[in-house]
Image (cartoon, rainbow, N blue to C red; front, side):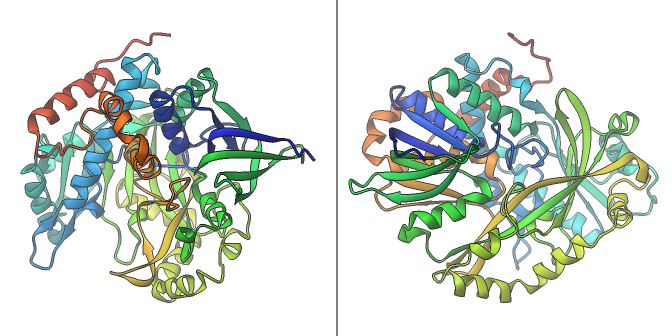
Length: 500
């Protein structure tokens, strides 16, 4: 056992997209700060950020129907879609800055242009989609979206989905060509390679056993290496970006803000098609409507993906249940996350979400053939032999007491919990997560380093020009940013030549 204590300015826990983004922003703002990263696995981006563990949708709210809600009066509330779209634009600007400054060589290693579509069946849903289309296209953020319920037009857009369908079926779709497919695993690895070149100390196969406050207000971490030795590391600021593993570490920190919060794990299963003839017939991310009683994270979608320079098709996600908080976690994760301070919150959530529990159990029990039946609602001619199952990442939904929902409310989204003095912050939750990483990390920086914001603001604006402004209310700035990010990231359909 080593009693040597290493002191550093910043410790990032977890080598995923969040730590990669925060580390990269901080290195641009204060190059001389010392940063250390601890990751329990062998490489960066192996858990939630890994390309096979998420859908790779650049979540810009272009196709996800659960971000737009029909109100009792029949009007469509698109406020959540606006918020998520503006947040994704921040990510696009930051990635463009990294490309323009040669910190990323070839953007096509992690981002590709891909139409985003919503598709619905049945007259009621078609009427909803039309109203949604009208509400969205009145907003400058969603210019260029098209709507069609014409079978010939739909055949042109989504031949794989439309062929072999009964002609009398009521079906409609919207399509917008400015969508993307993002390989968050590749992006995470690119950013960590960059951080390594900037002397960031990245320690793989190092697990954080404990976090406690030192007498001077800094944080002391007890770290276990893969050889079983114990190290002590001290930092003025700690960011816990360990995906599902963040909740346990937040609890160990003992900060009052981390109390009365629980987590509920949901795993995902995708079906992947590698038959090139089938893959060639589809080029879009097509999101449908979640079934009644299904949670928002189980919206069915058929996605073109670009992984390792290969095009494939994914369909899902089918929800699953495991008590683990990470794919590489422990079967006791859920049980050990229940503490005296969140017991009532957790029990209330259990009582409120019996239908969700029932849904998850049913999903776990599905045979491959039952999953194929669901796939055939999208692709009527799908053949069982063309599709394999892939287990996606674990997501831990936040459970907390809220004014609106009362005790034990299940939250869908991403949450940052930070201490009052800003010396520690943890990221909890799930989608739209990775897509909005830049927005979320700017929130962390604002909350945790308020004393530096005045000095850092010019650099932040250089990296992310629209920060602090509403793009929706600045159409000229929106147009300028759309044009420049599409050009820099190679999203105009022109192949970029790698500068390697």
